Length: 394
Ligand SMILES: [Zn+2]
Ligand SMILES: [Zn+2]
Image (cartoon, rainbow, N blue to C red; front, side):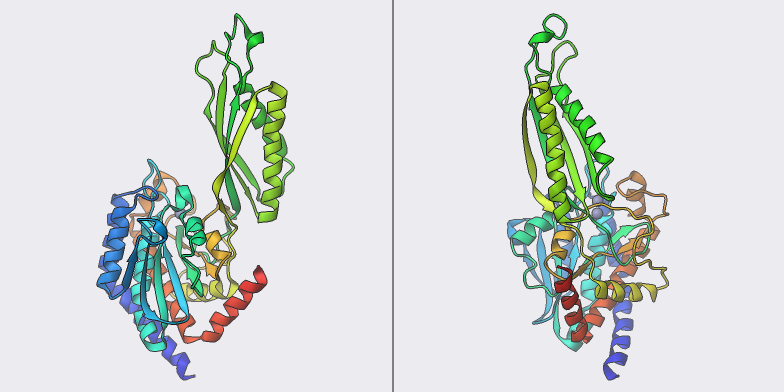
């Protein structure tokens, strides 16, 4: 009973804390937005974020996991260790069209605002800076290097077009493919040529046929990066880049083999030689922890937002947060910053990430995260329940 009223009071306090930091957080977000940096090159963003945490009493480790732009800032000590994850990489050409500037500012904002809860109940709040989400799966690398090993809980909020407690993200892996044929004059001696472009086109046709007979939610998509040099030369080389996605790891393995069969079949048909390699980083599907999702949803709802448990648009992508969610109870809710017709990874979404709605999203995300930290630190039995669900989910 006493703890209940304590929590209510602390929730008010952490919200006030976010409000008092409002100007600095929005400024931090817009500075990152107007200085977009690609994966593993986010030196400015990492610098500003760590500076902010350090200035607010966090102890900092920079360049963790041998990644210069990864970091970890902690406040408090002992168990439980509650982590809030930050992303801050941008997209080529589009800048912050995924709104990672808002993820970064809300993460550090929530971390700093959570301090009174740590002071009152004990435990550790840690903000982990995770670079290169878009291009290289930074968190997957950090998982392998042990960055999340000592955590009890991991949370991160991503901007979107709905307020949701969960994110549906698919397992995925990239595939690079090359065909090697034989160049020849395309008119004078076509019979001497082996057409590497035809091998690639046949592969697309085979994949298009396969696509009709794969499980719901699975995705196969790709581009041709080399289709030959000149129309009067039989292409001796072709290359492409593909992504295969599935709802779970088992089906991803099955689908990978079937996709590969499309390429080997095309190689046989044309006589071209196939070379391929699967991407080093494999994204895992995202396990949304029900207890955490419920808590976050209630807290975000209390700020006057209409929170869906699952996104109504049923959009699926993949995220390296999936790899973290295989290791520790985790959530990645979404905060609405743009009208529903706006598409993530578009110039319109980049504009939204620097808009007033973006700032409101940032502040509400930081508040709801910090309020959830209050719930978790005040209730060890809640952390235990989240962990139990995690074990069952595996
Ligand atoms: Zn993105
Ligand atoms: Zn993103």
